[in-house]
Image (cartoon, rainbow, N blue to C red; front, side, top):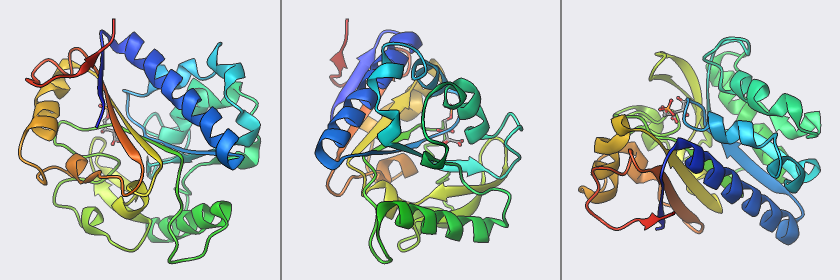
Length: 248
Ligand code: 6PG
């Protein structure tokens, strides 16, 4: 499992945008389209902003790209806590992606109905029926200091969901109702990319990457067929003992 360490948040964002664009081109070449799911929170925002700037804006085949969300807070789009709302501001409003290729989670619905509706949308866009599981080309994940990822929080039922692809949950910061992709869907992806930045994540990074397995939700991310990359900045990697692929 590659662990790439970049010197700082800016080079982390650049490397993340490069990896995303490379996966997009590869997916379109091999399968005619690129299906990606983005996480929320603050870490990925510098990378998202780069996607609407050169060289990435013109490199990524937006007309063949579908954007999904790994999780969402059940708040209005204009709420600062909205992951989709942040994506609109950061890049989506500035790129030539077809409107029907952008798939925000339906947080205006009751959470149970929203989760079911999103699962149906994922299957429809993938041309699949249950119990098939879509293979998203790229899923970008973050990690909380408690080891959560997506909105899969330690000890929550969503973490052990084995059938549904999307479920309602609650927790995190802000502690609100949320929708989240589940492990069966996330682990079915072609590429899973963790982006982790900052000294406050150094302890959890050490526990997840070098501690006993099976403790934290982030350690349940084990792709069944695809590959898993950890992209860290130097601060987030600062308590690791092991080797990481350092970039200049
Ligand atoms: C969310 C995210 C969540 C996030 C981590 C890290 O919607 O809350 O998907 O899983 O990735 O909480 O958040 P930061 O990047 O803000 O530290």
